[in-house]
Amino acid sequence: MTAPPPMLDLKGVRKSFGAIEALKGIDLAVARQELVFIIGPSGSGKSTLLRCCNRLEEPTAGQVLFDGVDILSPGIDINETRRHIGMVFQSFNLYPHLTALGNVTLALRRVLKLPRDDANERGRAALGEVGLAERADAWPNELSGGQQQRVAIARALALEPKVMLFDEPTSALDPELVGSVLDVMRAMRESGMTMLVVSHEMGFAREAADRVLFMDEGEVVEEGPPSRIFEAPAHARTREFLRRVTGH
Image: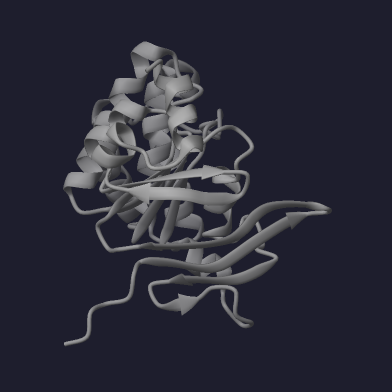
């Protein structure tokens, strides 16, 4: 039997903004059920790389294969593809005029065309997965930042994606609210979700990631298991970055 292709496979991905080359030929394969964590200084290309995985940014060159299919090829229905690639942003992007359940079910009804009862059933299940079943009827302004981010995660999970992309999911949260979001991500990892995470949560990376990539100036400088990256980084740029963010 041939092994299944990686869930995500980036080959030679480049992205330029005018004269600035934000990504300089990135190769990255994310296996099924793998949690890959991307760390690095601001401006190193981490978020741009993540946004190239679902074509929120169009790569200048290279290939992006999702479940074995090049999503940059002509004729790809990118909206259909994005249904299977969940994304959670730094800002929660909830609609203030919709309840938590309304935010979660909007795409189920508009995109998947599910009947309202079916959408609500799936939406409540997704809210249950993030520990917010009892807040289904709450408005966003009645929820803490951590709860709003968990609603945003539920909204992505309700579409039953094959992979989840996280772009600094905790950076807009007060420190005491971060743990609740990381707990949800931990549970997703244990349930077998494939995840690609950009974050400064080094403790979570050390504990939960299968692999850590360090990026700087549009390149992957080094990658490896968390134990090696955090305890014995091979590259001087990695050592300097970790010294700055961890204090040792």
